[in-house]
Image (cartoon, rainbow, N blue to C red):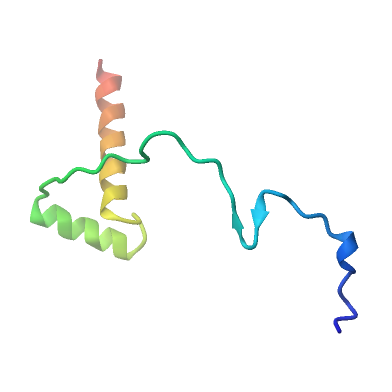
Length: 78
């Protein structure tokens, strides 16, 4: 039917790959802590504009980046 394809006996099947998705071991613990925060409307609009141009993938991503930067700054002062 497809003469240019190699016979299946030449392909090795990776047991980790199932269809088009990978099976990964489950991680222990939560990936993120969900909390609610209040943000200044001007900052929120600024972050939304950065999300639109793909600087951040989401509001959570922007907050995480900001907190990591602030953490490094504070720790370097100590």
